Image (tube, rainbow, N blue to C red; front, side, top):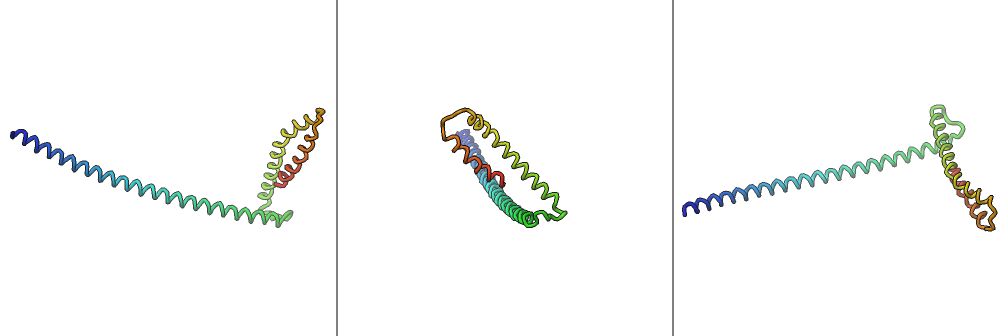
Length: 142
């Protein structure tokens, strides 16, 4: 029975050691989870700050844009030399946008023009053509 007592003691010692190791592993897991949670919180806080910064930058750009639009409208035709290139670039961009919008509308008008050439007894075709100039007017203003 001495062999069984010795085996029992070794088994108990091994179990005690395993229990200690499991406890240490659990403690390390808690520490790792806590560290991960802290890093996640820091990342979330950093993201909130970045979003706030981007929001303020958009607001700043919006205000600068408003100042620029006021300046250009205030000094129409009398733009100072320092900003003539910028105003010319703005006007060129506006013209290009209008040109591109005009290019988008042309394919829509062509099938209607072909349809108008064919004899159709429907009175709805002219009514459908009337709202289109109204739709083009806001596009020309932009």
